[in-house]
Length: 305
Image (cartoon, rainbow, N blue to C red; front, side, top):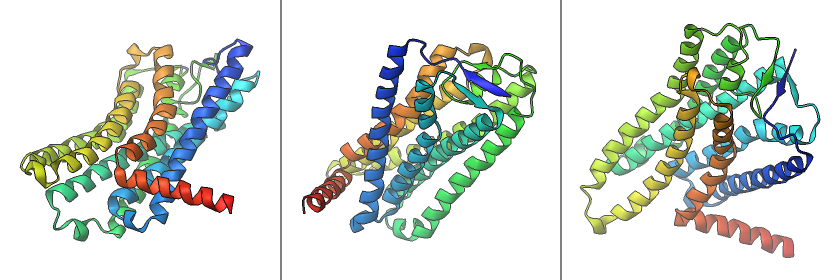
């Protein structure tokens, strides 16, 4: 049993352009996120919980894009754009697991900012390296658990004979549209998983930032309010990009499914968000910008010597 991807352009010239464009973006994603991970691990003054979470987020983004982008690149140049049932289930499982882990990790980062701003004296005692590791591991395990439950449910359903998927890879909404046993219960089951992975973390982030904003408004302007707002705004920008696309994709009813629209949105959160994350954190954070610059300088000097 195989699925056929129908979203790829049929014009041969567009195949080459699509391949070059996606390859360029993917190269920038990998380079940017690796630079952040290396900078955080080599710069001793970045050994704090905030940067540990940022490095973990970049690591998850690398794996997240690696699940689908190489497959998209391969399909762009192939005449037969097919995937086996097992391959589709495996791709979906890892994609949903890492995407959910990304959402949970953003909630952990919001909690970290809440403790840093609302309880600064207790921050070093509360946000220890052990707790940070536990939160990252819990994010990944929670994402994997939700993903396995959802994928096992979807692929236990009967699929139609026409197995054409109006998408670039195996994502939940397009695969659900080739299921023959569509019912209200099936749609509700997918919605519950989406609420747990998207709505619940977003509620925790919103709650954290409500307390953060209330605390920041009490700080005198000369006492670091601008720096705190700058740090939080970087995180909020990433949150809005991630959760906005995911909510539009997974929390909308199946009756409003639009293949072309969903294809565009999926490209935004598969390529756009992982590309913008390093830029947002590096350009809006002077410490991160300086660390990346020093890593690049050391690399250039080692190559010249």
